[in-house]
Amino acid sequence: MPLGIGRLALLAALALSSPATAGETIHVKIDKMMFDPPKVSAHVGDTIEWANHDFVVHTATARNKDWDVTIPVNGTGRVTLKRAGDVAYFCRFHPIMTGEIAAAP
Amino acid sequence: MRLLGAATAVALAFTSLPAMAQGAKPNDAEIAHIAYTAGVIDIKAAKLALKKSKNKEVRDFAENMVHDHTAVNDQALALVKKLKVTPEDNDTSKALVKQADAEHAKLEKLSGPAFDKAYADNEVAYHKAVDNALETVLIPDATNADLKALLTTGLKIFQGHEMHAEHVAASLK
Image (cartoon, rainbow over the protein chains, first blue to last red):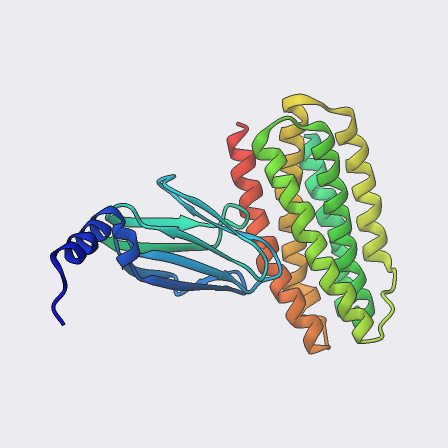
């Protein structure tokens, strides 16, 4: 069934207005004081979601200060990547915990 | 000099541990009590910092100490209940409390940046001493697998605190 011009235009407009909806969600587990996997590859528009399995609160804090996400006990925290590049991040409360995101355009 | 003294005193409080390990090893009930006491001490210091400090980094650190050590001690309490173990007071935990009380009295007399620096430096020294005791004596001597696992997780959390404390101390210089 051919799509009407109007519907196509609407779809195009939606796609342009919210590119983030096209992104994937990449899951990172936090368990026993580690980001797992410690390094992930993603694209601009993707969302990184951290799930905290520890019994203490953690953060995922970008070293370049782009974002600072708090991840509650038994909860999740997420960030949608807005620009390309490698971002190193750490937990502000336990700075021995480190991770990295490689964001392609 | 005073700070160096504080760090040495904390280390001294733990020196009874290797002695215990050579003769009578601390049993699980004693180990649980030492770990729990160490947590209580740090919570008390953090609460003093929250009362006295106006520095954001110091306050954030102290708030996290209250949360994390409470969380670890809640786990410890649940575990000793499950294992039907009654935590036992002992020379090491008594020495820790005595030392902590002395440090608390010193900190209470300070205010402003002098307090912040003394608190942060003491937190670095304290976590170093506790982490070392966990690594070399408490974890190796724990016989119950659940206790050993909790102490091991605790060590990772406290190593995180040690680094966090170092960052805070460095930011005050």
